[in-house]
Amino acid sequence: MANVMLLVGSVYGNSSSVAEECAELLRSAGHEADVFSTASLNDLLVRPESVLLFCTSTTGQGEMPDNLYPLISELRERFPLMPERRYGVIALGDSSYETFADAGRQCDELLQELQAQRIGDVLYIDACETADPEGVAIEWLRDWMTAL
Image (cartoon, rainbow, N blue to C red; front, side, top):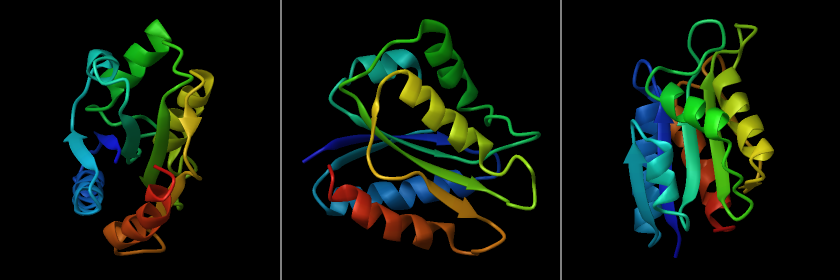
């Protein structure tokens, strides 16, 4: 079974709620799952076997939420190549904005640059299309877990 670190970027709590629901499903399937509302690069480095699952909304003009920004900044600054690291991204947003889900896109692009291996496709959850982001994430996660 896998060890999954859920790394949350949230302003109003939707991403946190999605991450908590995902962690519950992962645990019920026998995986270890920990939710981090703040994390540092050191948290990732001391758990090299962990699969990363970013769950983030976008704020402002396409910016990273304040609680995820320090980790992303540290990854960009120190640029630790992670060819053995696997990851996934759940990106929440509102498609009525030009910067729809940009924080999730930025996470994915950065992890690709760091040579991490993405599991499946990025999940984009549009607030204009669903009132149940947790339900959408859980359906996606069931598929995603088969690759762990």
